[in-house]
Length: 391
Image (cartoon, rainbow, N blue to C red; front, top):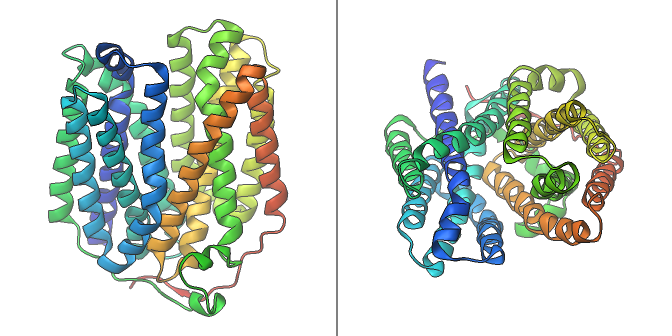
């Protein structure tokens, strides 16, 4: 039990460090872009390059996670991430910046499926929702802490946050190499439920398909909402960067608290599918309310709570997939990452087009997308599984 807790703590610290490293660089990106004389479209393309590479690499990384082991993929992913941050910090040309983001996307594709599979392997069915809630909280907390720490380091120099991210990720890789051991794989009869399915055809099996579409819908709607939220509040309400930071940080804190203290209880009460349905309903209503509220307090309240629904759906879908994936945790994690990346690539593009037509349209679009997820969830039936947890 003690070894299990140490390993779980180690992978959660790794996730926190990786996502804090991503968050570290957010405050200095505008300054670095200005320093190198890059256009706004070039900056947007850097973000898209990361998501696109993660999208392409995720299925392969998921397969390798099952073939070569969870620990190996986590360590390699952290090393690649550290190198991508070092390269970004040293880059003096647009080509090196793109190389850094491409490498960063590959590292994310390696880390996420491997960590999810690792947690699934070392926990029982009863323990898993709480552990995956902690995993989501580690990601959220890293994003919360990172920008503040990065802003502090940027006072020393615009490149310092990148070098700090490199150092943290490299230390995490060494620590993982020493502290983690490859977990024993789960044994389950899930293969009997998807007979004759191999490779990408497995995506369309009833066990997985609706879950993957829900992941896409969630990330698609969230990306359309998040990517334009700062512009929306600036254009419509004249909010300052400080106001926007308060709302985003507040939403992150509320989401992290919900993942730690509410997710396990709600999951036991409702089950994954019903919890996902209710979270999608709440998220759709709150995203729509963003276009209706006017006072600063009401906008603050809505934006700080809108992320709770999103933040509870993620661990719920991941928990469901970990239960049905059986011996193919890497495949499920890789597809989870791939469909998330799909939404992250296309959501902001469509949201941006709609924003240019009318400020409110991206939020109407996100509301409609989430509502489609609610309807789809009514056709989602949880299979009966005979899953044995680790001894």
